[in-house]
Length: 113
Length: 115
Image (spheres, rainbow over the protein chains, first blue to last red):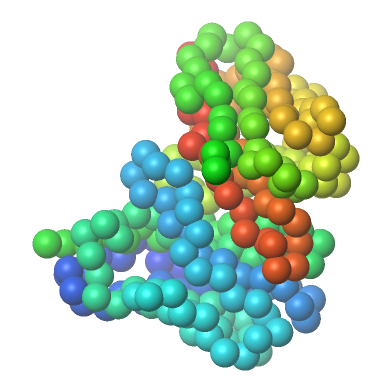
């Protein structure tokens, strides 16, 4: 069974600064997908960024980037130039090729004005 | 294009009563998920469908929970009888498939309160 661990329940960051969220996972599979999802307060979950395990290059989406360390089974998310609208709960998720999508417990990010 | 639609958005019922949630996935999406999300926690998978087949229901409490996905499109999740501990948000998600189409799109969820 795969497990996803997010060790930071809460993070606070000043507007325009950078914050990094950590995620580790456990799997015996060699190929899989990793995701970061964002869930704003009382709003639906949306995909922030996706990484395919067989790609060594770290994914980036505008102000969001990941640091994927396959050997260490680590998948951190960096939010650069934080904006007030980034305030949300962020979930790391793992999907093997079989398609079962599993989530971590989440990290609440608060961006301060 | 319409996203994943769930109804109702909110439901309050007394314990021991039945309740049902409905999900309409994005058109053409073969994979459908039902998740349970407690406040401040991550979603926990209840059941996953590939078309009309339930391919993973190992975490569905089958003594009181049931689900169906007739014709491989809409899905319903039922609880009978509901217990106080079932109070949570029930999320539905769908995806086009696996591989390059693995992105799961989520509905807004149904918030269930059992009193």
